[in-house]
Length: 203
Image (cartoon, rainbow, N blue to C red):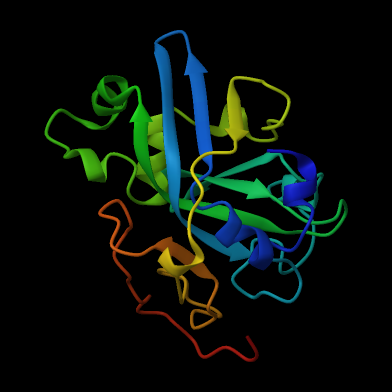
């Protein structure tokens, strides 16, 4: 994986990240996942984006450069990981919604709980971060330089297996078709419409 693959809009990059590998090496061990579900979020044109109202200390990483990890806390409970895309200075990122653990399943299960089934270990953005051991300390990490968290090319995904739909659980611009996932994959999270969902303008 190189920065050229990521130097495009979130909507272009999100489906191309399906099948890619994200690996986190820690003193406890290494966990790797194959990305199976993503969501695209842009900036000022996307009311569901953290960057909709401009740059803040929280969302600064979203503004580039591409290839860095943007980590934020959701509802004060879960860490969520995004891969920054696009042009430096313009906010754009892809949320990693789900993945399939392909290395370090025992460690992922230790982090998630003994009773969690394999397909659910990294199902949902909070669970994905927990399985990988990603927290706020990884915000801003360059995923392409061989640091502890690394994004790399993985399996090739046929276009016929990629499905597109609305984003999960967002209250604004919820009907935009910016969610991408692998058809029939048990690790993909279930669709849920936010009870606060508002109609959006445009696509």
